[in-house]
Image (cartoon, rainbow, N blue to C red; front, side, top):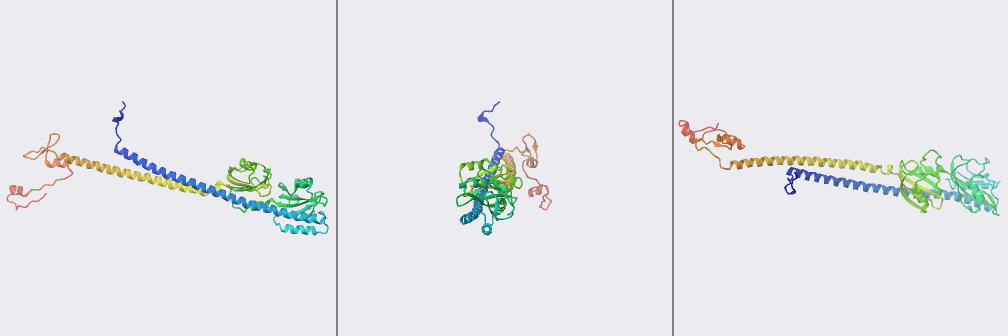
Length: 402
């Protein structure tokens, strides 16, 4: 049978106290948890912002490095081209003065592996670096063919290739040589080892799982540190993230984004940029597992602190509940004693002769037995002076409490 709303049994004080205590502890613990979450979120944003700033700074530094390296190579090529075309002798110089001039230009650009010239047929005839005089032809190289067939090509930078004289991965910076009548006379080219870029990249602090890469405008990989597959095997590949493709198509010069690298599936924050005045993209990526390692330690610290706080609040709540129960029991005991005292304060039937008291059940009890049962007191027996004189007239009048 359903109890009407007006007649519902109210909660006992104990239940009300427990509910209020539980709600108070829960609210306090939830507040502390929310504050910890807010603190961790703010810390995560701080680490993320610092990673973005670091990646942008590193990309700017590498932009200047790559630009300066290729610009110095082009200046050396220009100097040799001007010297040959000014003299009007073409690349053939049996006196050896051209080789000495080329060596001096090479010394001014120490990042170069070699600085060389070729004949119109593509044979290397003058220059600096290893392997000279080995009758090597570069007529089959794309950069040579372009400069030979396109007079207005200007500066040509090759895709990564294995040098015929060095046997290592290099890129070529080349310009066209012409006779006074503008006929093709060969090329001047500077050789830059990709290992030089890798050394520069390795010197940067990008973390254990960070990466630095250079790609051409067709998204072909020129060099990357660390090498993802094996020495040289990834050069020329075009596997890139959708974010990098979107950046290349946007026409912007810089961008920042987070993505998972297709090479190794590591989540990184990237700063990418178009190298100033050159057909390259530069990408610097900082791995989340590196720059968020401190933040993860903060998570453990926050969890420990929040867990300890919750344990302390639970223990405190238990102690408060226990104290409250003791106080409640003491209060109930006091109320019981007061009720008994109030009971004794009413009319008591007592025998006028023997002084026995009649209890609620109709039995007559000695007065001391009745009081012992209803009050917290004990009785001792003695004799008053009046009774002593009446019953013991021969005594000295003194009495003793037994």
